[in-house]
Image 1 (tube, one colour):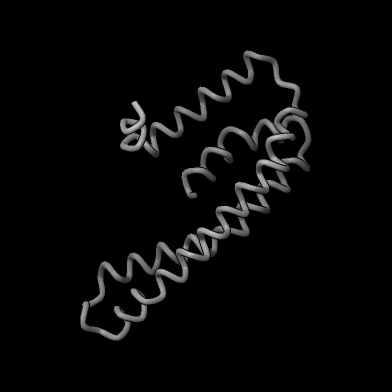
Image 2: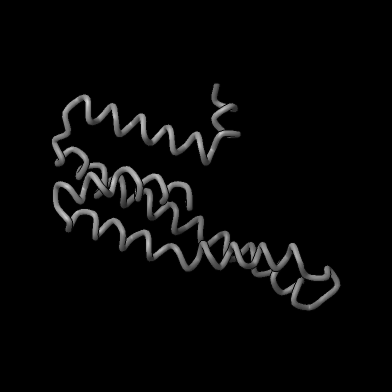
Amino acid sequence: MMEHAQMEETILFPLFDKADRGLAKVAKEEHARDLPLMNGIKEVIKSVGVLDSGSPDYHEALCSLPTRLKSLQGQCKQHFAEEEVELLPLMKALELSKEQEVSALEQCFEVMQGTHNRLLKFFS
């Protein structure tokens, strides 16, 4: 999700800002809504990595992780469903030229290569 957000923030949101600042504002607010949960999961994972496996804090952190991940999964599904209904139509409303669409798509893939390089090899 962090990489997904990075791609949208560096490529898509500037396009929205050029067309209408309100478009990007709504999308940015959606991302801000998901950040606390994602950051909390990152902190729990860091804690599990450094705590003594026999400590109560370690077991508490480890036990909280599945619940947090399940919650993130639900938020991701909701986020992607909202994007299909709200964000993708906004892309069409931008009325980009074919060249601009291709450029934006190429930039998205460049960001994905930087953040998902090991996964892209899987799809080749």
